[in-house]
Amino acid sequence: MAVTKGGRNICGLSVGVLSLESYFPKPPGHIKNPSSLPFTSCYEVLHGITVPELLNNPSDAMIDRLCEGARNLERQGVRAITGSCGFLALFQRQIAEAVSVPVFLSSLIQLPLVHQMTRAPVGVLTASAPALTDRHLAGVGAQHVPIVVQGLQDCEEFSAVILRNDRDDMDLDKVRAELHAATRALLAREPRIGALVLECTDLPPYAHGLQQEFGLPIFDLITLASMVESAVRQQAYPGFC
Image (cartoon, rainbow, N blue to C red):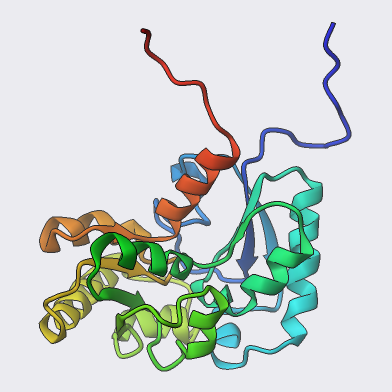
């Protein structure tokens, strides 16, 4: 009789999420909405680390808390670890070194892959273009990838709720319209873009609509998490021969 190893309070966890503290809506497709995800998830809430804090005042003081959270997720049995904000790219190396499971803190880690596949400039839709620096790109090994960046920092609804924490309630239709307008502006600046990467974890809920309008491949944290999860939890293939 086979004996299954115990020692965990909860079993069957695929992806652990280092979660910034935020209270605005997380529609289906958001990494912090497990009801819509194609894998099981577990969350480590980073109390006191908010989106505005990470974007405007990132510091090495955050690293210890992030490493502690990653180790806690690993102890709970997750097979891989991600984050709830693409700007955690700053700390990719430190967190990956702190645990023994794969770590992918930002969708930006896909940039070299996307460029190799398309051989064209990659469009990056980000929460804030001024806040996205060379340090973030270097953190995920993407500093040499040709990218064109479009930020949402001037979008009224998005910036009020997500970038400034003015309130928790959000008009999702307004955010959708703002995102589509930003994408039009991006493609008007650089028509040669071969694919889009959504840096911000609040944008994947709108990826389907973006693709319907613009017809481009779209990569985000959910596409990345689904790929990693399939790698760390391989399934037998159906069919016959």
